[in-house]
Length: 607
Image (cartoon, rainbow, N blue to C red; front, side, top):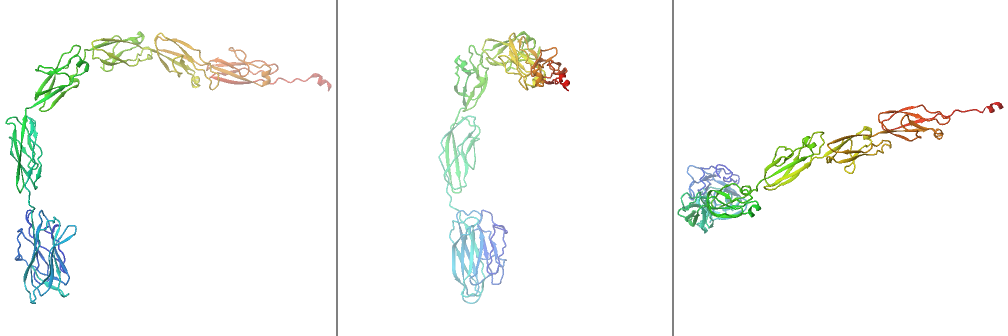
């Protein structure tokens, strides 16, 4: 509001004149705002605004040493002098306007207006058709205008002094005045506080106490709170009225607590009794497993007589450190003693592994076979314990009764080839020795030759056991000493011609490797048809019988070259012997020459 800030007086034009201002030091926020508007003598000039430092004082005399000049108001013209309300407008305000004038006869209107920050105006007081004296000379005189209480004002609203020329002629006239506008804040009447009832309360010795948050049924803010009566070291929050006590004691319990709420109008006290109970707590223990509970497992605090069952609670235990012990039960190992801390007003619980009985340990022995697998490195161990690999016949002792996973090691000699047995889940019973046997089994692996036959789909299988397998694959799971038959797949692609290996019988006493060889064939086509009709044939020299055109000679070793011989067919010229290399199903062609032509001698003699 001061020094030209956004809260300062708003200067508005009166006719052709502008208002400018000069401000003294503003009052504190606790002071009542007093704004002075000074209008002076007839000479043209500016209106000077004065801020009064004394709240509530109506001064009808302009400040000495300051010269203010009047303003000219033409007929029908209006001049607004305004300022902004600031500070706490709690109960409303009074507004006063006092002026002095001196000018030839003229009439004018005076209004005091309340304008909200949104622009709505309300006329608070007005004097219409105010007339100057008629003596025709400068005639100083004093008038005043005031309003009653305006409770709707808010900080940021405007108070406006509006002057309007209302002369009987349109000629311009001047008037001089010294005006004072005073706004006096009226506080709302306060209401003394009334504190609602607070019920008696309790606390536990040694545990910090925070009191209830008090409430009011009446009372004008701000409210301050005091602790009127209470035990030593108890404090109160002066803004909320909530009390705190870091370490309650049973000495002098119950304690009377009195608090007081105070505002500018009055005060009110409220009290209640606080009972401090001895520092005791409770203990609840859950024993496991249920089998141990059924066998008679119980618990108690060391130094006490009575035993408690699982899931029972002992109450009234002095706060502090205690030790829980467990009763001996036949066939079970009791848990070790457990330290516990009992807190005042709380229940401590004990459960889980610390309160769990365990059964006596058992043992496990694993015997492996056959000897060939053991010689090849077959061993075993327990997955859960992280034990090292154990030899056949080793016994693991002091095992907690539960289910264990037995793993088996690969046997590498001779081969690799022994099938690793699958993991086995074994139950170890309390106080019992458990033994299991595990036999390693062998495998059969077959390699097929030649590669051309493999490319044409050559495969093998164990009859009655596995699927067709490729060359180099294995069929596992054969017990040592068992016999199996290996069969080989007949090839029909790209044409019949590969000779399928004979079946093989294998007795498994260890990992077994086999080899099988597919053999090729030769097929010869003889030409022409006349030679074939005359008895043309072919054969593999030193191997097979005479074959007709298109027949096969099978069982030939791949990679070997065979000599093909042709049989005489009447007068047809027999082809020369051919050397044919066999790389699988092999085909060839041989053509007989035409028989020679003979001329009848008797025909020649006719000529």
